[in-house]
Length: 477
Image (cartoon, rainbow, N blue to C red; front, side, top):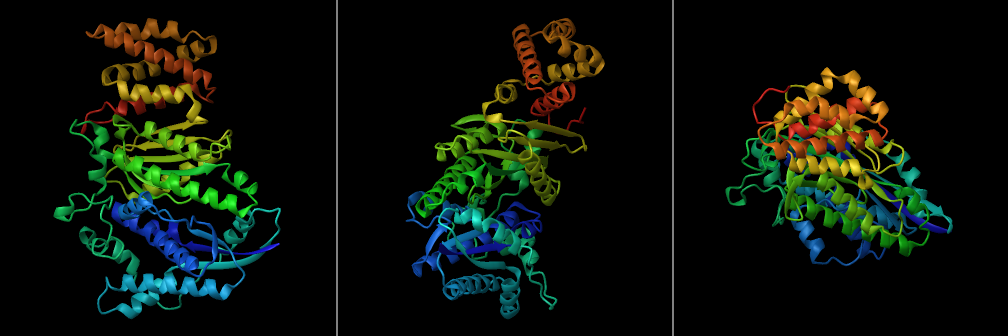
């Protein structure tokens, strides 16, 4: 039996829901990552052995991630130690230092602000003895889950300083706070020399094409599949620390991918990821769409845990108009991730596009990383640019729905497509032939995917592809 101490830090999600701007969403998460880092650093000084998060030497890549403001530190800390006094002291010192830094943004009210933030942070410290044949990470999972239900409430009615910090005019309080100080390459700077911060429109607008996707952004949640099962087999502390290091490296590599693509990493701690993405960007220096980036992130995650073939990522993706509330997209993405995690086979992706008109389009994929259907969709989005062809296919799908249902049942969709859609050849013969081939393949792959409703899924996929071809400002049809 060994003695361990676990710490959980919050309330992260509740604080993030107060955000209405990208800078506020980033700050609402980064506060807790910074607090976790500060506690971890103090524990290291006390020579306390950390299992989670990674507590090894900081190299150039880690420093670069810190200077970009990437939240790499998880909301849970587990260490091998038996003295609650030392751990409590480290936690209290860290909270006090963070609270005093926040107080500098509210001149003349420092005492109230420090007290407010000390009460805001919900930190629970638990101690337990764990058998050598049980992973301490798994042992503390339920213990810390239960402790998070124990909320601290203040009898005093404080001003909502955190809301004032997040929702100040032009992000002034965030911009001038200690959170941004020292971030030489902060990912949210627009034009640093003009002191501007990227908003949702800045993130969405990726090119001058005038196409509709430039008015939309995506909130993306990702979470590791079968990670708990993997951790349950790690009973040696050295292996757990190695796992923590791999998670740290994955977070850094993924945040770099997201930055090159044109997105913003809110946090990348442990196997959790939250980011804001435009719908198009660059992956491996090539223009592509959001699905291609998500597949690349999954590949990076699997590469870090290649010894365990069962580990993968699931995604929840909420796409919305740039003027729609950020907290709404955050909630939708969170729910979509929960849907994805419940899909058999894991490695799932649930996506919902909510258009300015109120029209919705939903997609669900299981085992997307090895899905020929998913890869084909990525290629169709990248290569098709004829909205009229896609619109014609959707109309035909409505007009001849019963024939399509019968054709799918009899495996004769190719013949039906030739007879129906072939009547709508355009002047560009080669372009139409290419599209016809792509459309046939898409129908066959969706059929092979054994969807519950092939027609509805085909309709949703065609709408999603068409969305990438639509001109900005035109009505949804």
